[in-house]
Structures are given as structure tokens and as C-alpha cells.
Image (cartoon, rainbow, N blue to C red):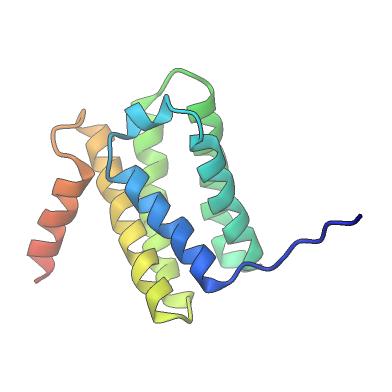
Length: 141
């Protein structure tokens, strides 16, 4: 019996994006101690590789670095904040490359959640990413 890779449809990608936002809007440090975070990172990495878009290479590299860092046990907040910030910026830029409007909206939300998580990590968690997202939404209104 041979297994072949079934291409993911937009709904699967959107579900992965929703899962990413949910993780980032929770307590990221607590989430890092739970089983399964590694699988989430791997799904995001595979989704990005599936797009076969060289413009997304830095996002893949940063996600792999973040995945490896969280798998290492000790969390270097400065490094995690730097990676999350760059991921947020690059993810927000990448939203314009998606074709499906539902996917564009989810990628934009993910970019905002990544940037908010970077701020949370760098400030020691004074605001939750959800609070930062609400503040960003209020400022952009």
C-alpha cells in the first residue's frame, strides 16, 4: 500500500491558521510546556512549504527556530520576542499573497497575534496578546 500526500484545501489551511491564533492569544509560555505544540509548529511549517513561495522562506526559517527553541526547555524571552516580532511582520506582509479572502483575513489575524505575542513576551506578560489585539483593533477603527 502506498501513501501519497493529499493536497490540503483552503479550509485545512484556515483551520491551521485559526489554531495558530488560538495558541498565540493564550499564555504562550504555558502553551510551550504542553504536548502538541511541536505538532502545531510542524503543521504551520508544512503549510508554508506547500505554497512553494520563496518569499515565505524567512517565515519558515523563523518558525523552525522557534519550534527548536521551545523544544529545548529553557525559554530565552529576548530571542522568542525577536522571532515572534519578525514572524508577525513577515506574516502580515504575506497576507497580500493569499487568494482566498477568508485566508487573507486569517493570515492578517495571525500576523497581529504574532506581533502581540512578541510584545507580551518582551514586557513580561503585562498585557495578554488578546488585550493587545483588542487595543490594536480599537486603534485601527
